[in-house]
Length: 246
Image (cartoon, rainbow, N blue to C red; front, top):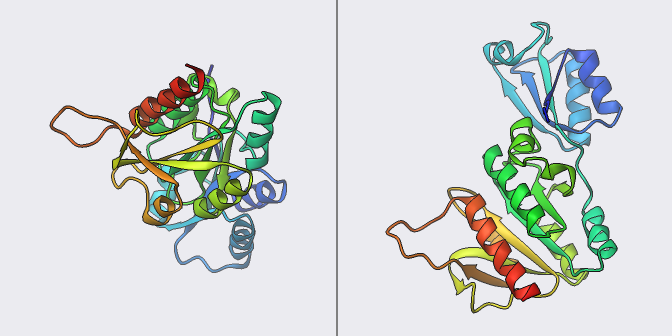
């Protein structure tokens, strides 16, 4: 299966993309451009909480496919994002306690794709990612998921901490991957759960970590002190599977 990430260029095309409701991951705008049509596009982007990057003309020229970007290029998601409610409904349809992965700032599309693939195989009901400072559903992420992206809903939210607080009202509790946490075999990972996986370099951010109910660690015997984010997500997901099913 071939995946395409949409690159939308030109002022009219980008403006219509926003107004039609198309999911735009990122808007790139010529740095210093102040004219009316571009400001209108920026206002539309802000309404949709789209990430806006102001870049040099050389950068736009490099990204442009048509050579006629007119100072604006939009990057659209390869797939449509779900709502958090869709993930909860998916769990209800399967008559299972919700199992959701919360990804706090994953920046590598290969990691995101691998996590989507593993989460689907582990029976998770969905993944939640932040709108800012994180990779979205790019073509690379879709391809790396090996088709799992077609079956597992991925929601994109403005604020991870606030989303977790809302999910707690729905009965979920949260386990955070943390090297200093309780060893996963000793932790209770049953019931409606959100598994929080942090950024490849810095781990889970402080505010998100403080909203987790427990911190869990993966026992490691080697001389390095961390695992790849997608590997850690896979190991912890299958510990949840083990505790749920066996």
